[in-house]
Length: 131
Image (cartoon, rainbow, N blue to C red; front, side):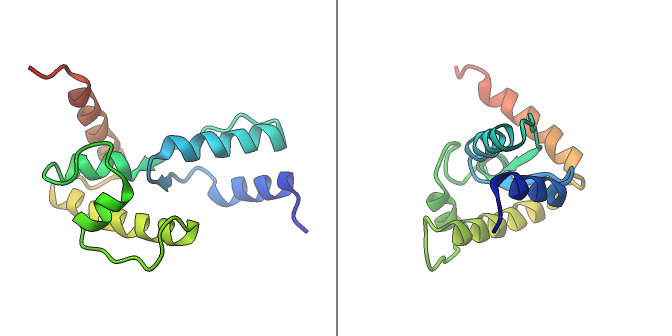
């Protein structure tokens, strides 16, 4: 039987310093950080790639920023057998991310660092007041 501390420790070893992929990543970040703090007394800060931000940045003609996963599933023409099921949601999030990475490369964004830099620029533009 797995204990939560052992599971958290195994998860940390598995992830290492790799970025994690999520849709609306702050939710996952908070949940995982809380589990690590509670189970291990460890303040964990992982790097997340948030598909909810990457999608409107790379597809400005798509659903507006802040749209739900269902909106992007429809926009990308994907079919999913089951929604609001962790494995199915993770799979469709990964499928969308693969499509986004292909579009990023088309736009000359070749590395995760370049993607993060472009995302930061996009965030600043989004935060600017609209005239």
